[in-house]
Length: 139
Image 1 (tube, rainbow, N blue to C red):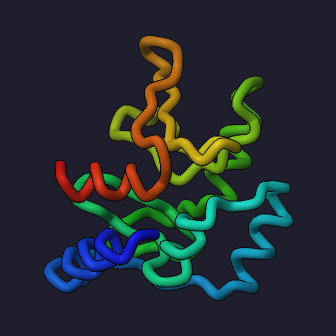
Image 2 (cartoon, rainbow, N blue to C red):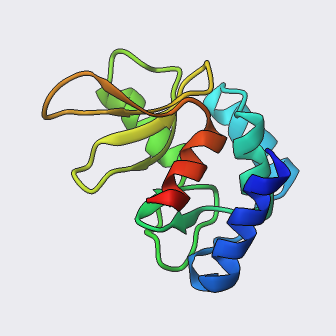
């Protein structure tokens, strides 16, 4: 992740400390990757190691341990439920949902996508996890 992006994230959490989650350990992340059979995006791993599951404005970015303002779900549960209900896109790591319940995930190419159940199809929310974070901070 670019240092300017990290600075923006840190500034956001300095102003909104309750939105920051509990950072994960590298061991927890490796265990989650193994359980889901997915290698996590490197920028998402950085986010988990430093911020945990957090809120960036109205975007919920789930991790293994989340901000107290978020629900009890974690990326393992979210991803497993998604796989049970979705025959396609099973290579996604589900990092959240929008307020209509549509899953938001990182695909194998590193794009952040939302599967829109109402209209069908996928919407690209970010060309990368870093791009998604920057767009979330700018909203």
